[in-house]
Length: 566
Ligand code: SRM
Ligand code: SF4
Image (tube, rainbow, N blue to C red; front, side, top):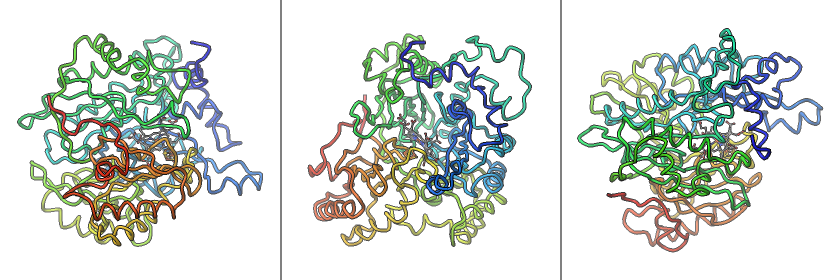
């Protein structure tokens, strides 16, 4: 390994395929934390060590160690869980975590607040629900996104199956997870360093996290261009004939460091369904071998591609895959949000998309989301689908059961989707404080209030029904994909944000920094002035982000062409 490799590379290489000293760290009753190296390794098992940042200062003054706990993230390709699984996950959230289930922007569940001595029983309980957390985090191919809304049931089922197969193919092969969390006996020699233990990843796995998504046009709910690797389904006569391949999307950036930036993926060609795994392997292994292992903030695939050149990268992928990609096929996306309420699938089953604000499923006041979804799961014989916009679909409902589900939705206050403004329905916020160690400002906890204030400004301009996509992140890492918000706030410091403006609503054009490091009054006044212009000057059906660009109020960033035709 090169002398310049980042310290994380050494931790991976020395970990005996992700074992490290996790067992010892877990057994140490003196502290609620793990040894430092194990804090890195546990991510590959789907968990992060965190501490309650609201209590940090108080505990420091009391000379107590931080209030450590663990976040656990599931690997749920396409975000599907059966009703039986839902009940088990709900029980885990109530028994071991902080009484909430968190729907993430990548169709996973997160549990927050699990203490160290309960980590193992929690992981075992998750596995008992036939859901795992392997590779939900870490420098590997993570949970694979798949278009959520099963309108065209057979197409979605095909695409979901492909996404699931890809997720499974690129799972780490080490048995470490089973030994540590599920007490599997260690097979002799299983901690050796022979590369056959990880045929794709080797001992040092990938240089950085790696994200894959499958989209079904015209809906871009997965924000395909934000992913390292993407597959856009090409459907002819209700059949998936193949996929356009996208590479090099990614959003993480560091304030004040222009060598880091959000980037949309490039469309590099078309593959048949049979070629998907081979092309993915070509992309992943090229990134494995070419990616920057010295500087973690420049190690994502987007930088590998920009540093080496897209054509060069594509040629290498084709060489490894053993075939040339065909020219990309035509596709059109019309939006990247969710469609709320009931819709019927082609097979006659019904699907109800519910709004879950910032993805947090919890009982709070009259909105008893956790209890309500438990009640639904008890009578539901279909499944649940998490959307990449942090919402939830009660899916595959027979028509005869709709009324019973509607009654529970009303009883437990799950009906925000009926009353909320378009702004509130489509807004995204990352977790941020108090659990995220990287947060510079509030996001999830700030979202409801900010939306209320913006709604007042919209109403003042007679724009209450304007469907504007708002996204808030507590730092520039971009977990709520803020760089695709028509209006976005990116945290800078407590109460202060960069205001970004001018993305489209299809996920095809990034926004731009408009004002740096501003507090709420200036945010509201700035947006208000632009809304006034929008109210008076917008074209018919013109969206806010598009208007800002057309009117020259925000300089356009080049994006993916709106209609990609061959
Ligand atoms: Fe993220 C790190 C939460 C989607 C880019 N993200 C984190 C951590 C784990 C903080 C940490 O490293 O200690 C956050 C945990 C907060 C908490 O308390 O739960 C965190 N990310 C999330 C979630 C839960 C946000 C949400 O509110 O839903 C999403 C979980 C997705 C999942 O199920 O796997 C989440 N993160 C994203 C996305 C959106 C996406 O993938 O579509 C991005 C931008 C796309 C991308 O990856 O480029 C994203 N997260 C990051 C980054 C920046 C990566 C980079 O290339 O620089 C970090 C920091 C890092 O990796 O160093 C990060
Ligand atoms: Fe944390 Fe930043 Fe991601 Fe928000 S964007 S969850 S603050 S890492």
